Image (cartoon, rainbow, N blue to C red):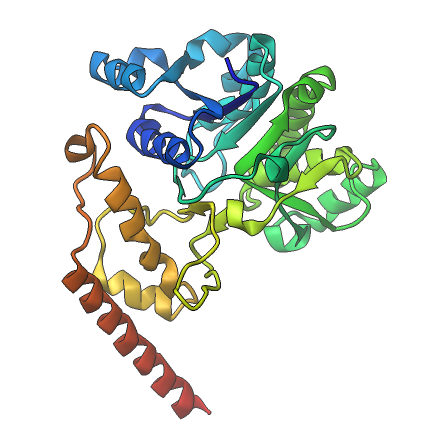
Length: 328
């Protein structure tokens, strides 16, 4: 048993993408973490169990976590993109603490690791959490002004701009998290927000931001290299290498879904053209994982196809530039 654990929780649909995520982390960080995948065990097939055993990934049946009351305490977010099962991610640091793990890392199933971690940069020693953090304006996240006033009056926040941590890759100090009953605080924050502003964006992350505020700065920030989201780009060196540990395929346009040419143009005109540049990295790695041909209908693009995509992107950008010139 290692002192560090990596986990992914959700419903049974996470199985193959989560397998890719965990194997990619192992590829670059071998013999550092124990790996865990969690969903309803009634949906685990003998084939899935066989593959998880082959890759030394431990399975946690979410039915064994019923005592935490996740299904009773949480409801689906306004976007309706994610099942209630994702909230088992906030139970697992407690569960893993009981197993003796000092630290654990929540990883989203749509992350691909492409670089070696430096543990000292991400380990949340002496703090509650570690993650890529920024400031957000609660009002812009559709939290009502009256709700913000209530939070300020109850000393839960100091103002409408608060620390925010993207929960795609987050480290937990399991002992502190358990002793200070942080899961209960997260539950209360989510319930409060769900009642006060049910249509707020990404309620899970706002609730977690409230929990971060409650730590009074006792959290660790690591670089965006560990949680690089595909709606932005990274600088590259003279050899076109870029320093990134994890690529996070946010949005509903996942790399295992069909690539639609017209969507590329839409993203170019809506500030997200580059997200498709990362897609082949996921497909190339996933194609080496057991079950790829069963769980993924897409295949990596050939070099010729990638050139074709780049030419299409250039043409779309030229069209956009021409339109902007005409406007000016």
